[in-house]
Amino acid sequence: MFQEFSEENIEPLATGAWILGTGGGGNPYISTLNLRRLYAEGRRVQVMDPMALDDDDMVAVVSKMGAPLVGQERLSDPVHLARAVEVMEDYLGKPFRAIMSVEIGGSNALSSFLAAAMLGRPVVNADAMGRAYPEAQMTSFAIGNLPMYPLSLVDVRDNEVIVTKAASWKWMERISRKVCTEVGSTAATCKAPRTGREVKDWGIHYTITKATELGRTVIEARARHDDPVKAVLDHEGGKQLFRGKVTDVARETTGGFLRGRTVIEGIDADKGARMELAFQNEWAVAFRDGEPVAMTPDLLCLLDTISGSAIGTESVRYGQRVTVVALPAPELLTSPAGIAAVGPRAFGYDIDFRSVFA
Image (cartoon, rainbow, N blue to C red):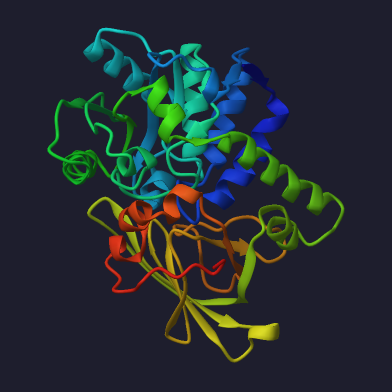
């Protein structure tokens, strides 16, 4: 039911979650340092099996919201994540049994741990995406048509906002994104509270374990001087799509998102070809010589060819030697409702979803 999350698991979780973040979710480096500091102070976090939740338990769903590039400039503090949970508890008039992350990708995979370490609550071994996505309606809870409100938002200036009601998931995204943009395109949030029954029915389960095991696989491959990219593919049943050198990056922060594209010129078996990765916080569609060859909800991951480390949309730069890989998506995301919520058309691309694993 409960398992203590040891300090030795922090780096593997961060490494694996950064890969599963598909370019988004925020670089986990600062969150890793914050969690290590909390552990050094004697705080500990227990991980809870989602199936051990009682149906009427209340679960806080936390995240850092905003544009990844801004998160590099305005460093986050665990105090704000904890405060977002406390604001929601005050509004609801009841305490949360446990805390979970809205996404297992990148820094947000550690958000639940930071809030839990501050508040002394367990973390649920689950999330609502099985990866990272940029918008509120792109979660398993939205796909399940569960309630989308209330939401609390806290920023570094001690602004605290509660959205008490929204007409739809897309309206919740629009309203909360507008608030987030006004406070600097980065904030801590506690999403709509979930019951234990809802987490059991609609959560993406055991993703903390998945990310930690993936990260440990990469770290061990490096230690053996094996190919860490191959280790990722073997561990996740993924496919290599392209290998090359980054030759161009265009990105801008607009509307609370980081949007743009990255161009990669092929080397080795891909010499003479070109791949372009389009992104909105996360990698969304891969075009090879102008033709779409891979797309969300398949997980598109850009990895450093030598280290196997993930490369985020905010940190990709000219000259990097990279490998583009695809990993299988959670089954829910490839359902008709899932594709409607997170497929290429949800990002504005007039493309029918075709999985590289079909």
